[in-house]
Image 1 (cartoon, rainbow, N blue to C red):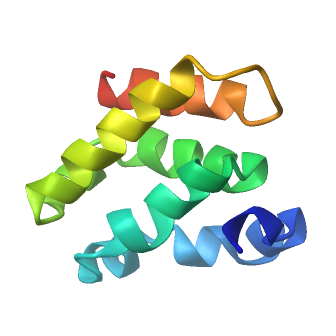
Image 2: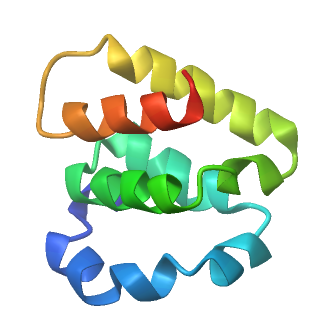
Length: 100
């Protein structure tokens, strides 16, 4: 379960898996990693994603199918109106970066 990925994982491996070249190689990463982190409201994982997108703001637009990105944006928009929790700040950051 993505919500159970411990914060330590992102502290230990966050920089390694944030490599733009590595992320760009997996065309399904939006629905394999980014969407599950959002769906589970994994606060540390979403902070990591916000950091990655701040460094590489065009990264999401390289992925196909576009439906995955559109679905991610829709879920992000819905997540913005959900109750306040530890993931809310990261969700707002991501939304600002990608213009949702």
